[in-house]
Length: 122
Picture (tube, rainbow, N blue to C red):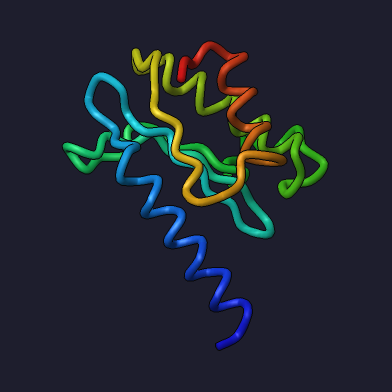
């Protein structure tokens, strides 16, 4: 097996292990973070209905317009602030944070801290 496949399998296991405990409800939906080599994504999901309530990424023009790069920690912080604004506009104040198998540092931590500073509670 290649090391890339091993890393993907290990992350998927971490993701599923965390998903056992982290479930989004109508009152407290799940804030899921995902990232790629070029972009950072965040979604607020109601798992019982199976609906995405809000989504933001560095692909959005309003988020990416003020950024020098879509891959750094500043971009992740901008996505965190934007997802918090969209959630608060919809009346969502508290969420459950789902890091989706990623370590809580760097981009993931920056997104979470920016969302907290913008008024989202988790």
